[in-house]
Amino acid sequence: MSGNVSPPVLIQPETERLIVTYNKISGPLYAIINVIVFFLIIFDPDHRHTKYRRYLLILQFVCMTTDAFITTTSPIVLLRYWIVYSTGIMPFGLTVKTGILIYCILVIEIVIAYTMCVMYCHQEIIPKDSPLRLKSWFHPFIAALN
Image 1: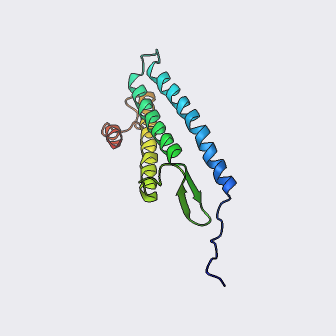
Image 2: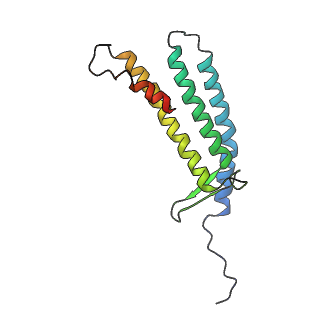
Image 3: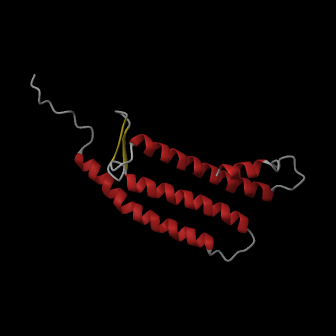
């Protein structure tokens, strides 16, 4: 056997180009949609639920940040081989471990922000004397996590 054996091709170049092209097209499109939704939340003329609007803004901002991170890093995951690599900015000073950690933190932030929105609606709908109403210390605790 000769010493110039090439490693097996894990992903076809056409497939990789398709993923990169999708990220280049969908990233700016989703960013525009996210900014439109962000401004719709800010300039909503209804002034009854301004506190809920703040929770929605937090959720929208975290979603925008997560989307921008995924678009700029363009991760490609090969589950069969347990390989993650990037075609975006990740090769330029950002390790895969750091990228996965940042993404996990952003997803946790999305879950916390969504929980805050749901809890606010839950507290507004349920009567004040109901046994199903959450304790007064629990909502600020969740808000502090964010």
